[in-house]
Length: 246
Image (cartoon, rainbow, N blue to C red):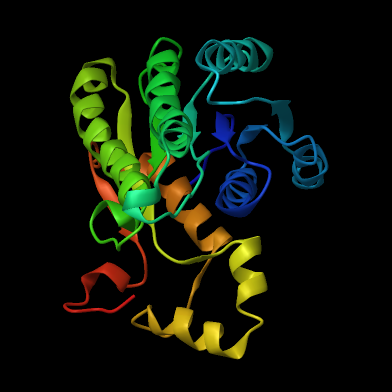
């Protein structure tokens, strides 16, 4: 799982799973360019040795231009992690069109734009990892739009594997479950929520962002050459349980 001399772009890299992925790519000796809409991401990424570019992935032309610019600066592009995303839960009857458009633009369209742009820049051996969610296979009421975008990522990934496979580019989806992002860590200070979230994992644990990051590094590396068009579920068994009440 060595990414030495490889340039990886990670979107939504300033916090949460994106920061964990960026950190683990750095640990695997990659050069990382982190995209994030928040200027505060600059400090977080500087601390781990990653470059920072302020990008709003929902703005298709600007996002594509940022990928091309980052590639020019690094002299190459070896991998892209489409991680940027937003979660909005709302009762189906009250889900607004603005909420729908926001999730589709960030969670779904940006992945398509990112892959489309990277496809013209990656060489043979390049890899794309699209961050989906276990909501693509198990979900709950109020998550219709969010689950739809994550299911779309998995479906697009399958098609892209065949579109880009002839170029020697692999495309896989990574589907995390409950993960210790900053928001989750804060919530788990409540003993009741801590017990609840742990109970969703078969080992009574909640994945850290760095554990998810290590799975992403695997998918980017030559160790995963046999994987293309796959959706890798990293949820500690959460979606494997029959009749689970989440």
